[in-house]
Image (cartoon, rainbow over all chains, first blue to last red; front, top):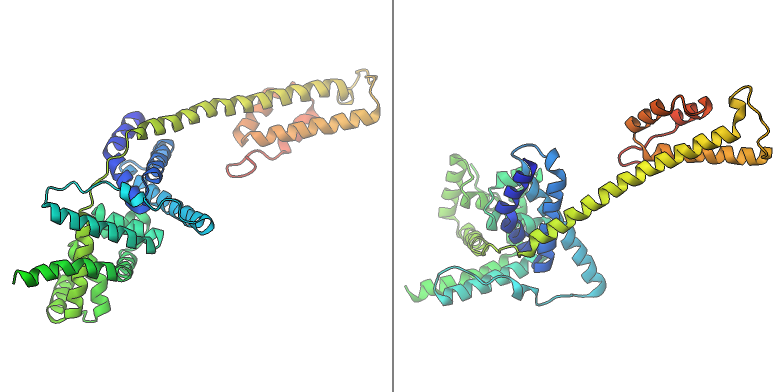
Length: 182
Length: 177
């Protein structure tokens, strides 16, 4: 039963955990390490996790592992400089069937935004990825992270304020297009 | 009724994800109708939502499962060794203790010959070694294991050693492990 449950959880969550880690860490190798560690921890603790709670347990572990690794990398950068400036280029290309110009524009926005999110605290960056990328509701995140919904609202509001410049710039092409098309 | 911009701005994420109760949602909507600044903030919230929400889900590399299995294999490989090491320590310690007790502590068995060929200093040093070995043994066992050892060896070790062993501190999770 444990084997089956683990295989099921691995199959249904491997890409979700990896994507979360990738967009938090912006480094494919680090994302793979976090994903692997999260599932190893899941296996070791499967017998102690309340039935039906394994998925949210996994999310919390991935969140904590990302935060730990971001802090570790920040500390390494402070001591040894920036090791991998091209890591962003390794993020997967956008795979949606919209017009090439739109896709290109969106890619640029996404990269700019992800880069700007480096200025946020590791916790906030992970919360942003959970809410906006993984589309988790605020109450779901609150449950996973043992926080209040109010605290999350404040955290997201502050983050949006910090990202104000890049978000305003991302809004402008739309506004210009609207002006041009009347 | 909520009318201050900072209060409204804090609700915009929940407003967009449909998590506000109807009354609060209506407050926010009414405010947005009259406030250009909050409408701009709403545009930024929607940009944020769209930009991150349309990131593609990245497929985890195929090496993931192999990495997990390798880590779990390391776990399995290490666990029996740890147990074996613990069992070996217990067995060796108790064997050494029993042997030393038989040779060096005849005084605990009235009527046996005290002439073992060792000086008093050597006997005292050996006695100390025995107690130290038992102390180490107690530290690698938890309370249940310690109780089991005491029961098994109750009639095989001198009473003095058994009594000392009972008072030694067992291993506790997060303690001297």
